[in-house]
Length: 360
Image (cartoon, rainbow, N blue to C red; front, top):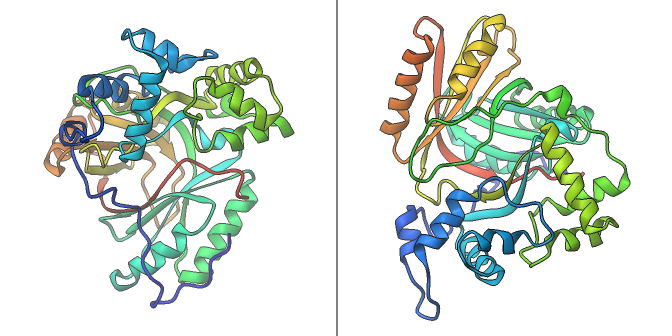
């Protein structure tokens, strides 16, 4: 999609509010008059099944087995949580660079034009995340495409339309690529590093169709892999084996519930960046990746004379002060006090979705 050139009269675009932000207790505590709810069961589905969804012909039945519940109970709960905005989808979370090309980009926008420029960028099919952040570079967005040349053209269109030259910050190393959220609060757990070269795949036509079918997540039906296979001309067992392989090489980061963290009360998030020697980044990055509260950690390219930072992590929390405290503890524990740094809190979410490949 090629949006028109940005004008100051262009209406703002933003994510739907889902009735305003609510925390997890409010979300699960409001029982509709016409349906009974099991709040503990729904919370368990949200928290436990963000990864390791069974690769079985009846995955939701296997989830239900863990609680003595039926697949029908599990599917009804997931449909309700999706309808209420607690979850985006149930399915795989991709490593975008594995299936093509991906980059993080940023531009500096005058405050009085931020809404119109953000709206323009959010309309682009290559853009799957778009956030305003507190910094001179105040608009940050992620682009994915089947080919790097598509990203280059998209960045060129943005520069021509906005008059701002984007920072182009492709990922070089991934130390923790998960973005699952423990809804009980931050905890220490093993880092989930990805070898980006090993994760890259080359797809045939059936695999591309399967990838496109997965964009909206698994169909919430008893045998979702059979439904996906119909769209990709594959047997359900082929679909399962393909997903298992992509998961084993890191092309898929996890398979499970993808939550809307803001709607579940994690309203504060900060992108924290440091300038560290490139040779030291892997060791420091691995230390950061194992610390409580860190959801993502990776090394990205620098931009000479414009952006000095190369080491990134994302921290999410219920309040800004909690995020700041996690960052301060992280700096101390990782020995980062002497390294130049910046913290970019998010101020608005304009777009958040999984990568799309069928729209190219």
